[in-house]
Length: 214
Image 1 (cartoon, rainbow, N blue to C red):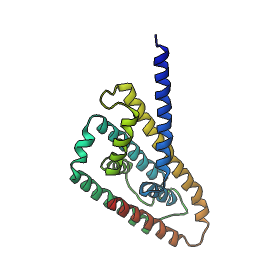
Image 2 (cartoon, rainbow, N blue to C red; image 1 turned 135 degrees about the vertical axis):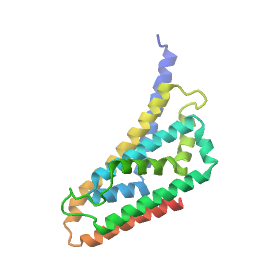
Image 3 (cartoon, rainbow, N blue to C red; image 1 turned 120 degrees about the horizontal axis):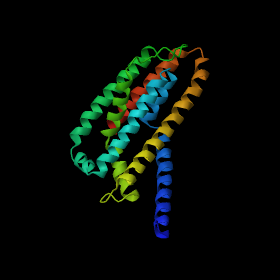
Image 4 (cartoon, one colour; image 1 turned 90 degrees about the vertical axis):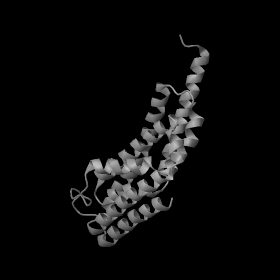
């Protein structure tokens, strides 16, 4: 039977998880290159592409946590060539997205996908961008030791942290996508869709450069 001390420990643990969830949710909502990409794709009419890209990012964060817990995060941190290679691929993908949006952009018919890309590719691009990001690795190298004991992590604790991470990111990305979807009809009423499309393409391209310089 669980003792009172165990119950208190469980309560503290749960409170830490909730605090971690809201902190990660807030950090994810801060304007950045990945949020910009999802918002631009939603505005351009490719909502499903934005969702799958966000799904890849969330899965990538979960993988990063797994790497940090089992000590592989430090191994990767000492090999910057992995980050350089992944950043080059991510930048190429993002610049390609910006080119597609520049050519087609927002269309009156939302069923017209302006990017025309496979959803597996969207998930893979989001996952790769996240897993091989030095900033993501550094974030969890700092956060996780304050949340769980990395020297003695049990399966339930690890699963709880992973679930909280995925949920926080998914909630934040859905908030961004819903907001962009709400703005889209307002922008569609304008007469200068060409200008809006160019602005969206520039935002996505700038996000790619941002990732490359970060």
